Image (cartoon, rainbow, N blue to C red; front, side):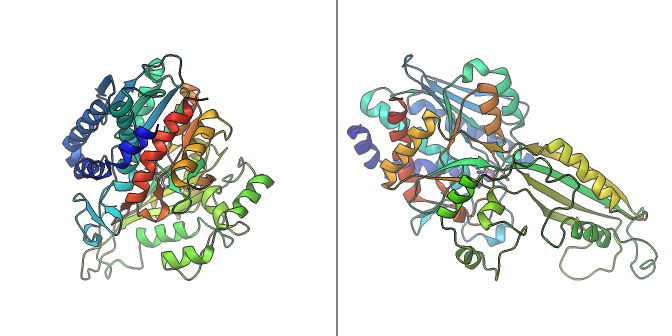
Length: 455
Ligand code: BES
Ligand code: MN
């Protein structure tokens, strides 16, 4: 093991250069214009898996973006870990808010700045490098490893969902390891045991059959933007509760133990509000900030469209307006039921003078992973070895819908061993990843493979 660790420690400079090459490929899954980049990125990461020592590598084409697979199963008696990650990234807009171009990685202040650096290229690359270090020093791995790196995480993982169902034997494993979440605090190894689910809807309001002069017709016909705003404003009550009927019906109550555990994490509201530049935090009454972010369902408007949005002024009474509205879900909310209830609720809030269309984009289920699996125990030990601190257990408010599917279809426990930080600005301008977390991540991954071979 010492050789492996020494090898890793003496190769960080090269690893960073390779990560930069990975990041330079603008693999934005949601944009048609980047389709070729997706294929290029899949080929890039596939060749890295090969170089790392995987004896079988393959790119599986799908209806959407390719899935990259790599395996080394040379230790039949040992457990098998499936390492999941995603090579796709979010769009970069608004571009003018970036300090440096999003796909030209720059190292500054101990961080690597670029789209995808933290979410998720930097985080999945660590596992490839740790596997490589074992091969270069010992010629084999302590456990069997299967890599699945997909290109549709940021758009709902539809192809991978089908792929898992159709390839259960290929993907058979004893645990699924995912690094796509955050450390609780810098320097603190973290296992996330719960994620929220997501339900993404769009509401389109139409009033008149065409855009109108707002002087000629204003006051006589509904303005879809005004009406949409009124509807949105009624989606929460004065206690911060979502007003969709039945929204909270099936929710699991937080146990006393969990509440106590959260308290022990000593979360500071003050620190967060300062960091985010708000005078005060707000949310559902009766819950702490950690409870609100990690365990309570929410509803948010993610975008709103309508009327004249260019510079300058135009007097217009638009015909249409629309809003993208997503809900974060928690165990055991039923996404389909919530979607139906949401649509009914929107209709009940709509006046006769408009027509409304409600559409569902996609949904993904929340997850709570078992805390006593052998893989979690191994991951906690590995984190402590590399970071030199006790591993903490958290939940998180973000979503990785495919995790539940891995767990259910492969009947394997998941381990969410995140290496990002909430402050990494993922999905925002100036995304970055701490070099320290990249380096400690590679070491953690190596220790994990070693620890997991002992169980
Ligand atoms: N890595 C994130 C999920 C995440 C973010 C977990 C922060 C924990 C903390 C992932 O890439 C992501 O962004 N997921 C999407 C889900 C999806 C269906 C678009 C999300 O949470 O919005
Ligand atoms: Mn993401």
